[in-house]
Length: 448
Image 1: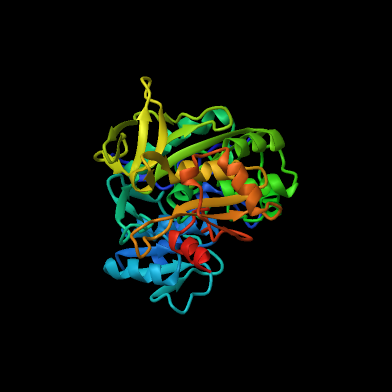
Image 2: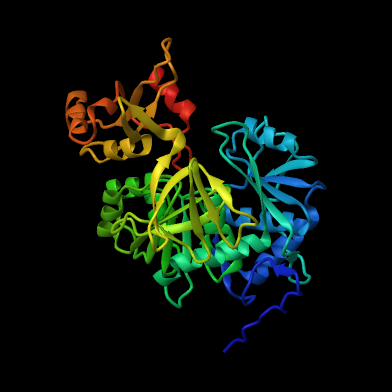
């Protein structure tokens, strides 16, 4: 029987970049298992090769290489920047706002990305001590989407990630019991949700992660089949809908986590019925990280994670949590029950008041998506016309549904004053890789 080799414990104030026995499997890359000791060797070697600087934009497509690059950057005392988009203009804007920045990745550079450093095709290894970083060191700066102005930066320390990771585990660990979970994620690691669930979790717990980023249903099925049980799929409502409608077969799954956009209860129920396993929806933001969960197939209320409580405000909600240095204000309106659970009631900016009646764009969109035959859609308020009136419009993906039939269904689901005055049927919505729908892209579709 082989011995299990454990690294020496970290000194006070330091955190190892990767916890557990050195022979535990951190990731599967290219179909091959990568042990923690090998991962550490990759991190040490890459850290010695990185350019000088203070900030690095990690553009790696391969999730394992993202993980190695993230830790190597931290080991060099640099900070990883996570722009709200990997579009060259957005990356350039973030780099210009942070001194001594460079970008790194595992593919050929986009010509518009300056100061780009490409990782070696074959990762080298270097001997040395277990890589450690100060607990209070800022290792990541995440950015909001910038939908209401310039993207706002939110720094994250390793200590904050350790606390939030413990909370995230409390939300899902009962899905796999005492076994080692295998994570497959369809979301990019550059998104804070993807960062938490597919980078931090395998780094700071005994989880194993698949190195790819499967997109199409067949790719997801293949990636899951390459991982040992119990399997956890980290995904979005857009990917779940594609899986359910594709007819693809999946190997046994212990559970799913969904975020980035509201998950319809009917889709949650269909996912569990079609593939088995339990689906947990998480709620969070770049500012707060994940702070609540629910089993959407069975409940509508959100349960705050341990150490979290929410405090309604006139224009939103304050989120209190152990991993946050101070309460964080969100624009989401929440109705809190006596036991601390809460219901989302939209956002102040999404609230509509017409003829003395109130509704939210989020609720109207949910009612649209509940219409049989609607595969995807969004209700939005247009910019003011010449008279200052902001009309309601809808983008709809429903290839077998006529507009008259859609309106008949909506009349039975919402007050007539909130019926969309403009409906545009499209083949698909211009959603980003996390499933979010940029308002400017949606408005361009409506204008054509």
